[in-house]
Image 1 (tube, rainbow, N blue to C red):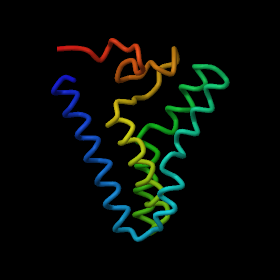
Image 2: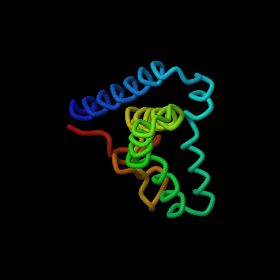
Image 3: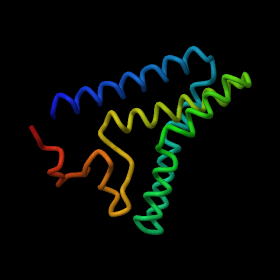
Image 4: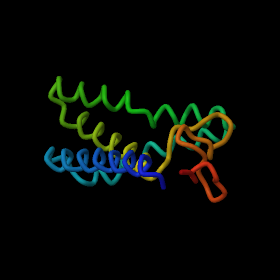
Length: 127
């Protein structure tokens, strides 16, 4: 792994850790965290309709814009639940990125904005 790739992954680890710490401070039940941490991955069911639809569905739940807006709304309107759900969602995205999973391209589930994932990927080898 290239040093720059490691640095980016460590940044995402820091984001995930920050979300988990903020969640712990929020006092919301850990059952909610356990129940929702993998919820964005249900978007993979979109792949049953093909790679283009699958990529759209997956990416819709794996971009930061919506959970960041939800977190802001939760803060502004004093909704601990909205903030908690946003923190779980952001933690999920951050963990995915730390593991090297990116937004999907319409060509294949294995093709992401970070490169090809999977057993036979050669795009991650480098200088």
